[in-house]
Image 1 (cartoon, one colour):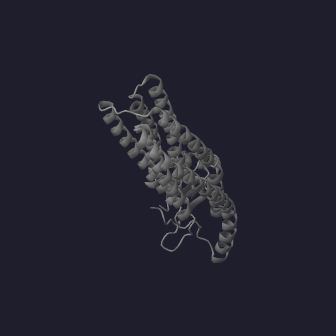
Image 2 (image 1 turned 90 degrees about the vertical axis):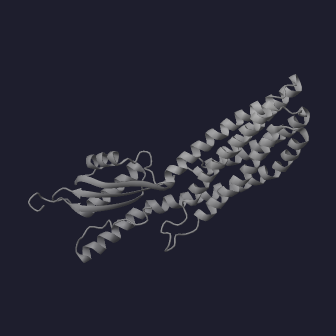
Image 3 (image 1 turned 60 degrees about the vertical axis):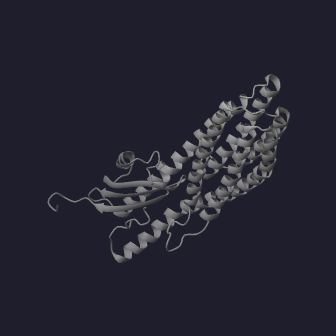
Length: 328
């Protein structure tokens, strides 16, 4: 973990160092504070949305369980199981938002920001496990078909679709594009919404043709969609948890950009880029200046370039002067 990074202030006289350090941090943290305020507002909105969606899905889940047991429909029971995991995932997402809002402390210099990512990862794993369970049950039903009450199944599935559409609309209204936690919850509800559609189609085929195999076959289709969402969320959140390099922040790209666009930069090395959350990239690097270049001016220019060109508002930059061959 990159909890600690080298100092990014150049070695100057005590008076100049204090003066430059104060100016630099006044400038550097203004944009970061604005970004953090926006992120806090988005998190509060997302937290409200997942609670509302959890109340909807959790309330209707009981009705689907009863309907599935009475009708004998695997599609309804699978959808009810999906709604159970939806409710759990939404509550887990809420917990992630709540914990991530806690401030940093001496033992956790970055606070609990990654709890949102961890919640998203857990939700992705739950989606994969849910898909596996549905497929297992569906294959069993293919070899051992059971009688299904199509009318009851259809009525419950239609009501389930209405509830799922409402929950999806609530979640989709949030800023989900750059929020893995909200996207994980959204995938759960989207899969459940499609599960309700599949249950409606299966009920219609059973009522129209008496084709009982429509129930497990369409359940497998829903499982495939849940698996797709789960794998995608696990891959993206897992990349953050192992501190993988965010897309667009590859070391070679940063080095080439800074050498081209920042005056006074001779070379860039020791570049490390990772992310605390999906919307908060972090960068540390070392810059070697050209002879005669002002170290503090270069440092501030590099930080500004990283913020504007790469979206990395939190960067630690160490600046050293170019070493002549004779001195080396």
